[in-house]
Length: 133
Ligand SMILES: CC(C)(COP(=O)(O)OP(=O)(O)OC[C@H]1O[C@@H](n2cnc3c(N)ncnc32)[C@H](O)[C@@H]1OP(=O)(O)O)[C@@H](O)C(=O)NCCC(=O)NCCS
View (tube, rainbow, N blue to C red):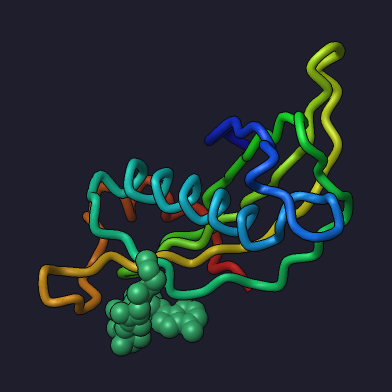
């Protein structure tokens, strides 16, 4: 997996229970994964069409570093499926603990917002990956 982004949990990111607010985490993952999708597809017009189930396995606290990782799982005609995982990282030791993970699907769109094919060269380079179930 590639490291996509590093985040720092700040007081503004905390919900009422003292943990990182789930919607903030979702936004971090969406931004990191969408940027990665655009980079891989060599095109800035990738939109999120689906986010799978996300289970928050561990809380994130103020001052925690969060590392976001991603991996392309499959590339269709106009869509890309990506596994994304967030890990809390200990500043002193670098030890990481998985916080949550999910699957994103992004679609390439044209200027009218309609789905269009991802570049053939990109599709070819991921053609070895089976369709993600
Ligand atoms: C993305 C969007 C253009 C797709 O439109 P659509 O009419 O479903 O397009 P298509 O039927 O041609 O499908 C396009 C691709 O999306 C995939 N797709 C569409 N809906 C999907 C779903 N619910 N789950 C998984 N894949 C889906 C299709 O399988 C297809 O993949 P492929 O070309 O690799 O085979 C449209 O749904 C949209 O504009 N959604 C809003 C996007 C958005 O605003 N996101 C939030 C901000 S980024």
